[in-house]
Image 1: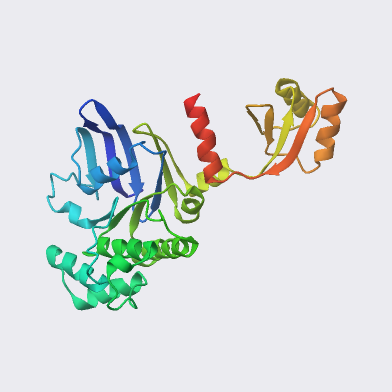
Image 2 (image 1 turned 135 degrees about the vertical axis):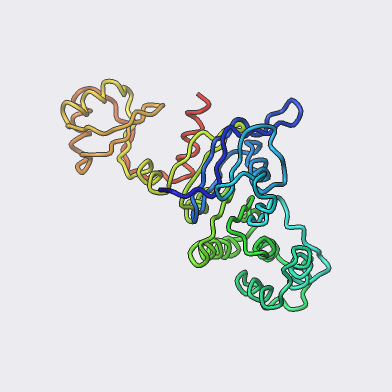
Length: 305
């Protein structure tokens, strides 16, 4: 039986007449890295704030670790967050920033702070002030601060935003270590879908305040499996030829005359011959692999339609 670390049922947040999160039913497995995907204004940040206790829902149900927040007033202490900004003190060092927050949380411990600095690759920053850090260093310090108190759930809103390639790579490695070595559950939003594809184990897509689908990495790989793509002038006629002459059973018809074949395409010339023999104009043939970004954009077009 799956153990959910986050569950929502018809969760809704309204700001006067505007509904930012609309009847969201969402679940997140313990120990997963779940990518929250959606365009700007879709409700990602609002949803994360509801899950971290920064906002209260207008209606609906939220469970964390199998409990309602009303059952345990301290439950949000088990959640670490980096949403919008880390609230760093620019005139303080990384160590002193962590010490300040640790004092507020009642968990100030020199060894703990040093371990977090090491974990987030900040142990060599010394007396350098946070205001002089690179964007990547600031983001890693923000995560270190979110890890104070040893949370079981980490919620990160666009943690790779503004990072250079090395910073993105460092962030990816850090998130994987937190999941693999600490068993931490991580909810992460990002516009960098190719990067999210490399780190997430599960995905949820939000549009206009609604979760429109959830799927695992394995399910994504199945949906984005390799195929052979054709572009023709008559997809209906081509479909008949593929089934009756080429014995293709698994294929997909897309807009603009595109067909994707998922079986029996080892010999493309065989398919091309039958299409041309039956007076079907063939404009292109190519091997095709779809990634998370392409899948998201395709599903977005379908959702709009």
